[in-house]
Image (cartoon, rainbow, N blue to C red; front, side, top):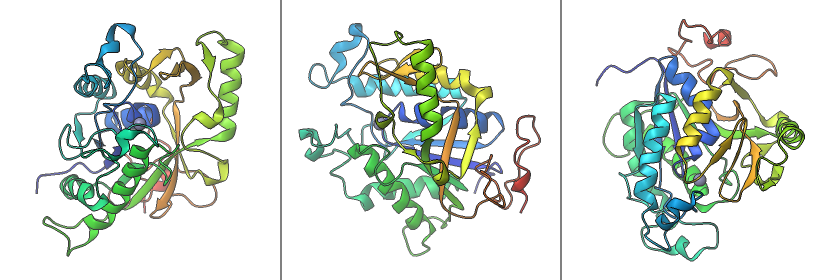
Length: 311
Ligand SMILES: [Zn+2]
């Protein structure tokens, strides 16, 4: 087995752009601090809409060329975040975007949503046993907001974590992921950010989204970890801009193809659902690796919030 860095983080996402919106600051921070960050994206996002009029013909109902284009956007976003290990589940194009819930594409052969969980999870087990992450980040059981591909990404990530730990399953040395987190957004923080959007940039976009449009929103009490990515807000913003067919960024705000403005959050929140919290008491972890044996915080400025990390 090759030498692995002390800290290894795996993120599982449904489409190119989800990683930058949800975890861009977290990914940039851990990469900058020397962690090995692996992104697995489950589909190419072939069924997405397209924002720039000049690229409108890429959509699936015209040239159906959005998937390959988004492979390039994702690569550019990863350069902005400093991530070199990004992969597509089972290889690029193996599973196709299923479209929104109820869409006819949901049931098409090869769609991610119609793929048996164990079949797709097998590909992720291979990645887990290769890079041996201590921390996994994915969505909650609702996929954050009910998109079939996000729900399926959640199911496959959780299933693969179990299978990878099972010595009786498949080939390769078993590996148990120490901590699993779901992406979260704190309702109160989001509401305040929407207030700032309405107060400072009411006309930045044709409309303004609602709190209910944002995936993973939850009450403060459910959030167990908070990653201060303020030093990486620029990288996150640049990564989101790289997904130009999907995201329009304007300062600290952005809009998806629905043209509704929402805040671009540099502090990213998580809910620990498996593993042991690395800090005592009710305070939030400031480091996803807190408490993981052998994964102490690197000796760099900006990693001073990991004093709970030594077990
Ligand atoms: Zn998505």
